[in-house]
Image (cartoon, rainbow, N blue to C red):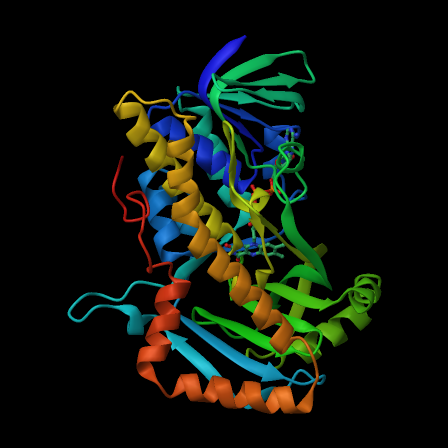
Length: 417
Ligand SMILES: Cc1cc2nc3c(=O)[nH]c(=O)nc-3n(C[C@H](O)[C@H](O)[C@H](O)COP(=O)(O)OP(=O)(O)OC[C@H]3O[C@@H](n4cnc5c(N)ncnc54)[C@H](O)[C@@H]3O)c2cc1C
């Protein structure tokens, strides 16, 4: 039996960051995943990019990962949001956020966030984990049994390995099994949409502007990437579409796909060309009724998986991790039990409101915008234009997108534990 303070199940973006933040803070941690870790960094594993919010970047900096990705991270300087019809043409009424609006008077303006390729994030996290002495990497292996009681938690793995810990963290993503096995229910539904993910090359530079066009089938996001190795101007596309249409689009040949894609993308960046593989992600929502059980916490998508409409799903997970590690480190320093109910309750209470607000906001936005109703379209356009005219409202939304509101954990404030 190997013994740890914390055993994390799932080495996705959330589990690997949790294990690293915990390990760097001195908690002995086991990180288990059924997938071989080096496979996760291959180009064919995950073709997405992630919008890392301003405050999430501070945690990456604090755990020593940011230096590895900074050179490949494209700053988000502006966000432009507009409604668009079936022809892909954007309405003249739009909402524009400028990163300079969030800066306090007299201070330099920071980007709202950065676009980073998931492949590079995973590589940086795993590289740092491999050199963190407090973390044991247990992969590929799989949890076949878990037991929890008042004294400790235990995992039995497929390999026969047995791991005991003060606390288990499920970072198994939205399809994990530990939540249900622990009797924790969830609100969950499908949006009947699929997100097509791909990279596009375009003639003109994006100048750090992220665009979101609300098409009748769902949001079409154009996210600024670092220029390619030969100076190609590039954007990452998250194109949410009605599931049946998305499947037909995925099956199109190159020429027909390019036509459908270019119509939606528009010509604001000159000629555009989809390149590389087309990825697909069915979209749905899952929000756990509670995040804790005896000696068990849920983190990241295992607790809340949401629509990528606002690019905030992982950023919520990052804030979960910052709160959880702070709570655990405080408990350890006081000589308290890491898995004690009041320690876990502090985590759950800290994260509930922030997660609930984002889950509700993304759900509402997707329902309001992913349709072709004329009265709703008019209301949306007027709403976007109205917010655009009120600087304090714009500033409120920019600060939310940057993750700068609420009671921020120390790691998110850029402090070390
Ligand atoms: C199209 C799209 C675009 C997105 N863009 C953004 C964005 O711009 N910004 C943002 O903040 N978020 C974004 N997100 C959300 C973000 O990608 C997710 O929140 C994040 O990837 C979830 O990571 P995770 O580690 O919680 O789960 P997962 O990535 O699902 O990882 C779970 C891991 O657990 C392992 N596992 C599960 N069960 C077991 C078991 N029993 N034993 C061993 N291993 C197990 C799995 O093998 C897997 O590796 C986007 C999501 C989508 C779909």
